[in-house]
Length: 299
Length: 297
Image (cartoon, rainbow over all chains, first blue to last red; front, side, top):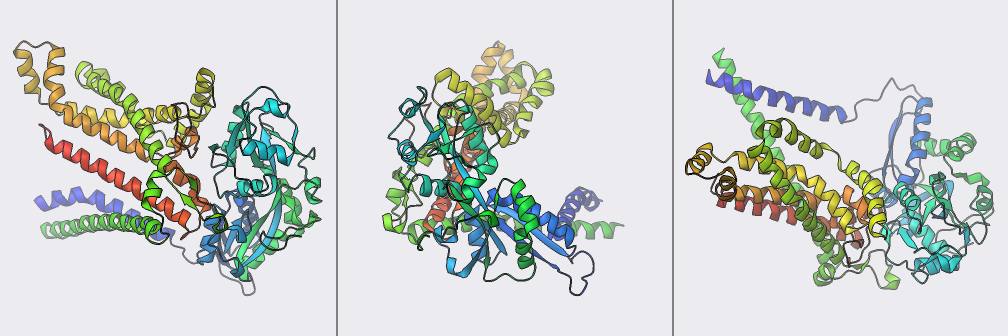
């Protein structure tokens, strides 16, 4: 009798635990959907890395999987650094990165193959009411090294300059620092992790200045011209506007199977002209110039 | 019938044992993993502990050509301690007085209305607190005090709201545990209600109240997202409550996606995680010690 009350008490717990175990078991990849037809592409790959690229790659993967029923592509974020190091360890098949693998400490770039899938532009951004329209690289250096602290000195209103940085290691920050700041060390400022938060903060703070990838521009902040050149797709394509970088998808060695087919799909004219452009990026084929990884002879 | 019940009972007990063992293994594994990663900063990357804990210079991405990374986490530690301390200073008196009100003054609406209302606060995800802080509190502080609005004060205010439900719930339990006879005895001796609360109930349940505050403190110390959104994340020591700073947790979440396993920078983040782990361990030990000393068990 006593035993059975005891059991009655345990029963719920046991049921919950069993359900949990079944759930865990359900998460382990089971057999692929459908029967593999000989000659048809099948298999699964994991893509991870840059959060900035996640949306674009996710969308491409969804369309790719619609065409290939026996293919499973999982797209995760985690950051460029995480993606590259997971690729290096063999945990994933493709790493999305905003920066050249050569720029990442601890990554052996010689073992990785670079696939440049798009180009993204960046702009210095300010509060929409800020009367300043254009700055030079020297202006930006003076702002970000703390030499200039008031917009008045740059032809703006009497408003203290508030610098908002992305974290060290962020692709956006390292590109901005290398190209716009000529590698000058920024002073400490407010740091925000996500591009969306940076945008919200700049829209709120009258004296704010930061930098953003062009796909994030939505009218709530004002992008600045650099040396009077606007950050447009055309100016980037012929390198008149220098603040841009590649979006990379790295593989370990030459890709094969699903990974190769997926990369080909992303680089196909249709994807580049529709998906890539719609997401605010510039198709790789539009570029009239190329850039080399830093540390090698720059063209 | 009886036999089968016995068999099922034995099986059920085995399930319970298994879950307990799994839980212990997971906990030990996490602690070992964090310790191993975190200690690499000192043993593999040879960062001096003195510099690590007492320097505010944080240049984790400096190349070897420029002299290698500089990893000083003093500003993170000071930021965490300062924000947590302030949050507790603001939240603890309010929460404890509320708990007394709920239990002793208005048990009816207290139990049915106020306590559930406070507990709803506990269920709001921290990203929502952060967002409200970013959209309402930061602009308010900016218009009221000038500057950017991102500040130690903003972080502490957001945290104080977040830890209030923890402190209220635990404090309520502590006050409820005081035996009815004790109160009746005090009243029978001619004490007023205030005297009973102040001189009989309060001293007796004090250890429980302290535990409540410590649990709130532990929650505040470990909170990352909401604080990160309103504190500004500047790797410097704050000079005033309106200055920006950074905390251990926001430092980790800010940088972790950009670092590569095995680099000094990555190890430094693990060491910060280890510091957080040891702090929460300390909080648990302190609250246990306080409870053990208490008059009421």
